[in-house]
Length: 302
Image (tube, rainbow, N blue to C red; front, side, top):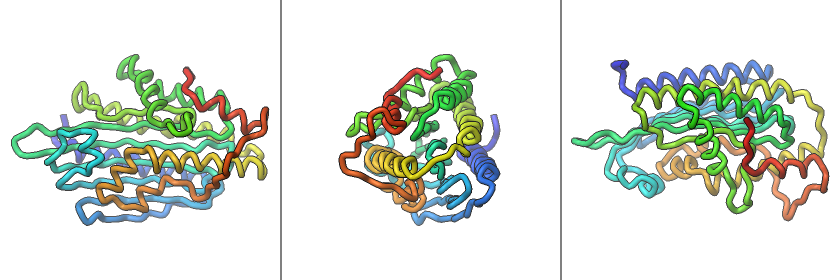
């Protein structure tokens, strides 16, 4: 095992992952570039938020790295894990949300993270978390199958039960209870991962982070030149509203970040640059827009 601390090893992986993903997204866009915004947190730690705007492919893409620490856990965390009370904590991760221009290119989210909490004369509490999910507005079955097969293949070295478990966890987590629908077509999600020892958990988390680009970029290349007009664009903006609803109402990471004194701009970087809400909107029966509803419930894709 490396002599480096778990936090140092995870930090090195995350910084490299952010660099690799940003370079690949810039190459895919071909026009815009990421602007880096380094920041420091008064209570401890900081990060580097990178945002690309108004590109040929991406209307907005945000890829953020953060490493923050503090003396006391926020209420949202201790309610979930009461054993964290009274511990000094460190949290680090890479999180991204991509909002393409073309409504036929799906929105997507990925996150990988590590958490550690310590106090004198006690074993540290630690775990990994992460995953990625896909939010298409005009779903294509082949794309969704590719997405899930790539997720399955990333999980396969760690046991046959891993992908089905994390796929179900994703379906259940990214669910808008007040709408009775999933946010999209899912993917994989895991949290509180510490079984099997640090090395196994670290390897699994790295596999998930490294699988994101092979899962997403082929879909981008297939759909980026699909023609669209005002109808598709307006529907995209309307459905982006569901993204806002989930992130502000249900997402635990958003709540933890805000309650722990995180940087608001970086936390809300996931929100779309343009969105619209329409009272009692109903798509035309039989339309391409109405077809999306068939995909907003869990399904076996592999």
